[in-house]
Length: 113
Length: 112
Image (tube, rainbow over all chains, first blue to last red; front, top):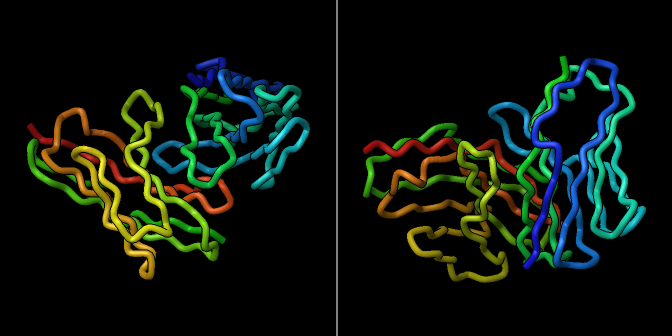
């Protein structure tokens, strides 16, 4: 069966420090991968979308970047965090077919102080 | 741009009663599916039910069912026989171009 893991679960970082959140998917190949952010009490906003290794689409202008160095690995990064980067980050995967469900990881809480 | 509107920020229902959560959306795409996700306090996103936009028949999953009106771009969720474990945030999300677009959510409280 397919599983998705992301880490770390919780992170407190000072303003201006770098960020790296990692996500891996097991049990499937060539998945679509997604990074979403959820601000407090709000819905999820799509940040990045990837259909393959090295193929990243950015959905909103921001201070963050994403990379996909391997088929089932998706990394969210920042060189210098801003206070506004605080939030709950969710990695997700799907098979790439419109009818298939997108499955989410456990999420990572980021607090920038 | 794709938009999703969930007009009920909060809803409450008595245990064992029925509640309906509303959702409207806007998309120019013709090929898409629609999903309802549940987010309990653990923050895990859990699929509740999905609907194929090209099917007129409404999807049903145990106590959960949808009322899908494609022309009106409406996709409501009905929860029958509400249980305490149903308490959560509920998000409506169509997926044009295989990218889920989320509404702001409805917080559902179950009163014992």
